[in-house]
Image (cartoon, rainbow, N blue to C red; front, side, top):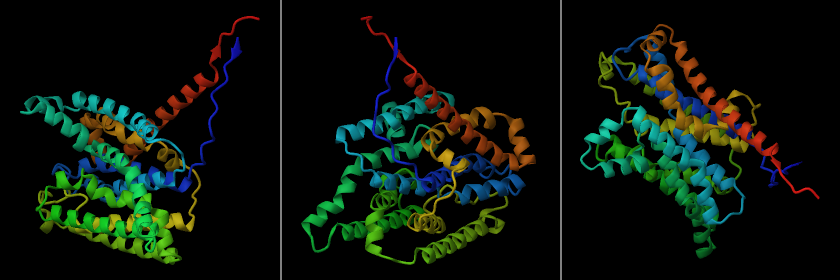
Length: 381
């Protein structure tokens, strides 16, 4: 018996520690939004220490999804891998759709969505709408959203080039910049229409790809945007963006801790309109702009816990609700402990994210070990 040779492949490009760190903080933020937010949206905890910590985490990390969408476009735009459309879509399907369907199936039965489906008049429409638009579990809306953006990505990536060839005097980079500006206006218009109630936020806001297309397109054509903008002072720009973000979040938190505005039991809050409130629209845009400046400034933090989590964002996003439900939410003693010692909220969020990342990392290493140590039987000479 001879050891089987592992298949050779082109070496993978080195990971960008800054991007991984951003992704890691963002996925920790997503877990915090969902778990810490549960101490905000019920008057059981109103004005308690756990309420204030939950409100801060829930709102401060609200940039996570916009940043994820931007970074998804950025990484797609940086890819130089040559592959056919069939290979591209097949790879995305295997990477995202299979695990998404598995988590959706488990959520359907174990997070109490089966009774809702049974009560629906059109069960097929309910199921298709949840799977391909809003998510079986509402927090899963990001997955069909990103799948739809990935489906459109080859067209979106090529569009400025097509327009540039049709009008060489303008050029692809300027077309990319102009389309980005147009999509920003669409993003702001949809946000305002949802905020004022003229459009349904749960249809045209949170889950709709058109609402998020600006961030994805800006990431996809980030190099073109940087080329068009030229040598602007990025160090000054990120400071201005950070100041705007800080002011927007301060105003947001002041409003949501004013009992004359939100009510004595927090019953008049508008947190459900998460991404379309004007102060949050400004905050998200400013945070993403500030962090994008870091790309141009060449920021390169040391690898650490955040960059480790950043390598497993999909897995953490998919599994964190089930993990939190079966390790924390369903146990009243755990909730009471968090109420008495709010710091446990942060610890639980971090532990859940790390447990999922460690599990997946261990599984990957196990598969690599099996592949590298497999043996093949060969006939004797």
